[in-house]
Image 1 (cartoon, rainbow, N blue to C red):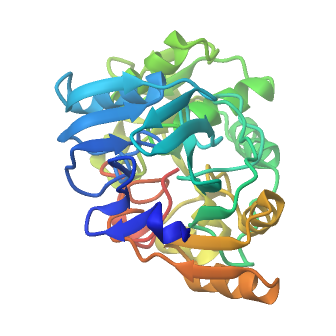
Image 2: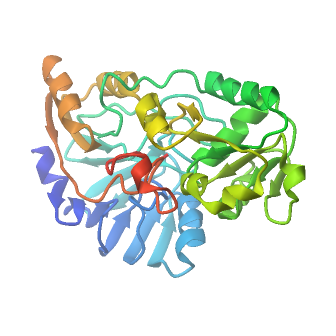
Length: 352
């Protein structure tokens, strides 16, 4: 049996005809398996949605209770039989509730990674390596220039700047689902105990993270706070807010942006970001290539990102590889989410 007999590319995205479902479809379908709640992967309007409980909750927060005809929560490692296919969800390490989806049929296993990272993150379950025959990987940062480094060092830069300029407010642009909560958790791990302020767009999802047992310390809304009281503070906001008149409520703000794209310093300069922070919720070049090799897969399908570079790398390692060219992914992530300024990153930018 060929892998294409199990998962095939359709106008709506990857479809398992044997199982009667799509994975992260880009348009409404009868049954959708969703890897995570970023809106380029999780859309409203499907007949049925299967996802982790956290992903379903986050979709409700974003789209309302009636975002799908029916929903089914799936636990990590729980085996489902969907018509002619067996399906399991496994942690992807991307954001809270994110999952890789393994599809098995006729002794062939295909793993769709969704978005993932294989570095520690205190706000979500760690990435789980799943041996497979075919690995479908994202490629957001699939160029050798993208090596993210240690996020703790980036947080150190932020704290050093805050200590150096106690009279100024620091505004950190970060995607509202996943990145913002991770930055807060990293600040707490670094010993920062002061209240952290939130833009209104950050509040609902951040409070949901807290309800799931993610400790984030004291958080306060920006609204209603006097300008003078914001001196010396750190505030999380959507990237688009960094260029908005909203920033005028802060005393002489220092603007920061937490994104893997900040590795390209010209982007920070072009957008007036004073303090670029290379913190990504996607695997970098080393993470992608190491994961591809570690799965043991003999065939690699590459989607949403720098597909050609990773396909070429696979070829040099004797792996069969091809790009999937699925339109519609990368429209919401670390750089170009609905709340972010699209010009901050390329259109094929990352979720978080």
